[in-house]
Length: 112
Image (cartoon, rainbow, N blue to C red):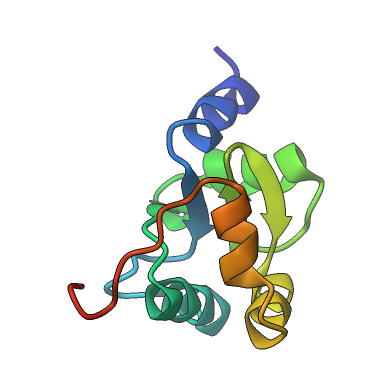
């Protein structure tokens, strides 16, 4: 399998997949940290992939989406965008309805 096949499998392995630098508990860049905070704030469960663990994945994900930066958010296998796009969707109130339209269950933040 090629790195593209590997990334395709990862993208399709969860409903919401975030390619980021570091982990949700310890983001290694501010942009990755912002996306984690937004997803946590609105209650979207997600799978994270630390691109710093593999140079092949780090470059491969940029080629996969033809998007030059990380983080990258995928919902149901569809590339959504990076930090700026996720932040704009959150600030405009579009993020939660978008997730709900895609069939993503939003956690009740009171339950955690």
